[in-house]
Amino acid sequence: MTGTQLYAISQWHDTDEIYARLKALVSQPIRPIKRERMNEFLSYFETRCVRSKSLTDQAKQFIPGGVQHNLAFNYPFPLAVEKAEGAYLWDVDGNRYIDFLQAGGPTVLGSNYAPVRDKVFTLLQSCGPVTGLFHEYEFKLAQLINRFMPSIEMFRMLGSGTESVMAAIRATRVFTGKRKVIKAGGAYHGWSDPMVYGLHVPGTGRHESAGIPVGATRDTQEFYPNDLNHLRRLMMLNRLRGGTAAVILEPVGPESGTRPVTRDFNQKVRELCDEFGALLIFDEVVTGFRLGMGGAQGYFGVKPDLTIFGKCVTGGYPMAGGVGGRRDVMLRFAAGVSGTGERAYVGGTLSANPLSCVAGYHALLEMERTNAPVVAGRAGDRLTQGLKAIIERYKLPFVAYNQGSIVHLETSGVMLLDFKNPLKLMREVKPRRHMMEEMGAAYMASGLITLAGSRMYTSLADTDEVIDDALNRFEDVLKSVI
Ligand SMILES: Cc1ncc(COP(=O)(O)O)c(C=O)c1O
Image (cartoon, rainbow, N blue to C red; front, side, top):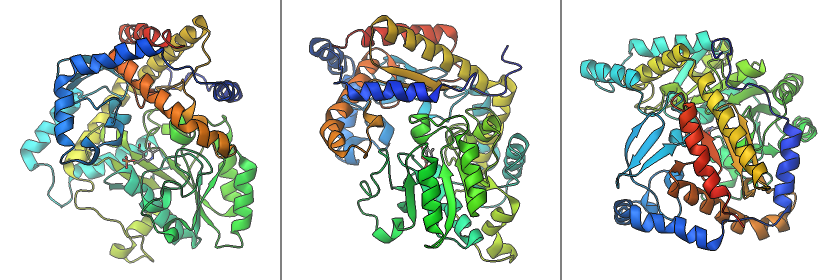
């Protein structure tokens, strides 16, 4: 019965077992797809995706790399999409795919969900997408979020998750008068200057910070995922260097749980923050409403001081972002207007426009009505169990696990390399990354869209039939490895 379950996660995984399997995967040589079979998969793109190739080749003249979105940069070349509905996507050559990218996570209701689209159309006909003035839906959305997540006493809507993280960091510094912000190594919190630090691979600090002044990341620190002692040491040392303003976490673990946390990890970090007088920020850009209407904070029963929203907060419509939380901290965003103290400046011409607000409001109501997070979580469980069975049947070293509708399938292990073993990292990152690209291409040629060949988001639209069809396709690819 989905009616009684509130969250997408039926049971928290055995985190230690997952790490043991991932460690075993990374310690072995890679098992890519057999060359002849891979050539067959690649020939699909040459013969069946002719218009996609031509369009994205032409686009390269005007768009760096040919596509605007990081997730669209697929091997051997990006697909051009024409139609999206429910669990499926169609490319411009008329090929149909089961869509486990789901736009990177926001569409828990499935793509292009008609009841929300209708509400957006109605609003567009009356006031258009933006006026710059207050619209009732701003209030309705903020009030609704508060109903689902009581820790969100106030909500400030912004244009993206990235902006919202920037805003939250600023507010925590203003509120606490402290300087340092600590993130987990490998976690993604958008691409603002201070957060492009320890990206993808723990311990890599400024490795990807090209173009970012050293000063912008001077007060950012990273700790090794799950290493509470490391976090505590940083917070202790920070007492002598400006204090810790905030710890920011993806509550299921870096990269949407690719490096999963243990069940009690968030609570332990909450306690550390209280001990050191730091604020706790949950980045719920992915988990916010995907794990359940109460978010990861509801699932884990941990109350952050501030929460970052993105993706689901507008149900997949544009300008998805916001920060919410404790009234006393949130009032720092209004201080310049209402004169209650030093202000953390935020803005944005299109922030909280009526289109984004109406879409978010109705998408969240529909998610509640249909119990979409739980239904999507069930689909994630079915997909994961099926993948595990395939892995066992063919005696593969691969690892499948999920946090509800966030499903991970690690085949190359590239995301699990880290800086504790820099030689191995340098030697293996390229071939492992290429294997992941090839897996993504093979899935795609088999009618499956994944996120970078290693992650899948399920949705309300993923019936048992869709998942079983997908599993047959996955099996066809996975049995072709050397
Ligand atoms: C956990 C997390 N935080 C922040 C962001 C950034 O959000 P946006 O892409 O809306 O800027 C993302 C985007 O994928 C994310 O996954």
